[in-house]
View 1: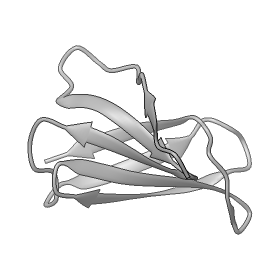
View 2: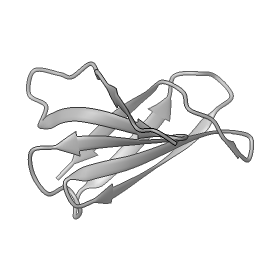
View 3: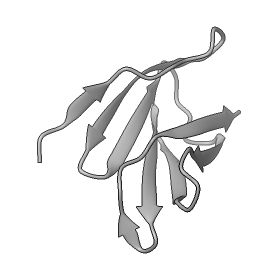
Length: 80
């Protein structure tokens, strides 16, 4: 499936530079290596769940509706 570039809402002190969505996964891209950082993701829809995995200069986020991957809006916090 084709990747889509997203325009995330970033805080003023954020090191995130953008995001790319491919299928149900969203890669949030940073200006530095975040592979040793802790990432916490919160879906913005009530009954959804999500996972976040730091890999290199990005955090891979997947949101779920039950057991099915389902792209949804989320908030992401990364602490290094």
